[in-house]
Length: 335
Image 1 (cartoon, rainbow, N blue to C red):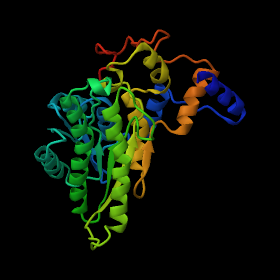
Image 2: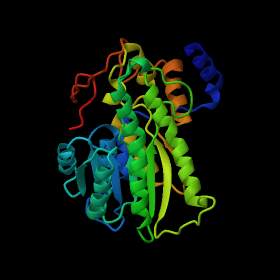
Image 3: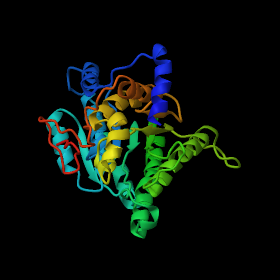
């Protein structure tokens, strides 16, 4: 497989110009886009992020706050520590936290009500909360684990999407965008070890396509209702992110490839995706971190130029930088 990749890349190398995607470049580019002042401006928008206390969700919140937008994060655990960390970094920012089990209708209703109260208007709602149940053969999973993954990833996305759509539909003259996070299995193919996770993620593009059709054309046989605010629904793909979700139960081989080639830190992914989220137009868009160009660029650097991963060593171990802290899995702590 790797030999085929190398052959294809060498054959197309003359027409391919590598792009720079290292973390330093991304952070520098993000810094140039950020306003110099952190004071409140009329351009401030309201953002809701589920699963926002850690990982890429926390990264999204950080990036939105850096752009002077107001943010509500939620997590199944009390997000107070995450909120405090974000407030310390953005002392003039508006950041609020809600404890919320996204598979609970009561909790989701409370999240929507809190967002309306704190933000006034919600322009972006990102369904980021998700679990994978661990890397295990399907036959070895407990019923409880299967149920939990389906409830968080699929039921949670359905409930939160409906709550967001209802909220946005009531916002007169406002355009709202709902993003559902897709993952492994979304483009077909198997996800051995993550059967339930892959099944739940595979359903989200279909859900999004169905919602886009309903929003644009209505449901046959029923009158299409007009709403005060316009609602758009999209998919969001952060790709492989160095979080507990990715590294838990991983092997040295997996960490070397594909993680060491394609995975990125949460802040890198957020720096790339938040501008894309803010720039999205229309309905039913697919916002991705691991675009075809990025994947080819990473393969080119690894298999043609022979560049080593800045995150994983030759033995499949996480490279721990001296200026950062890591947990027992090798996940870099964010606060």
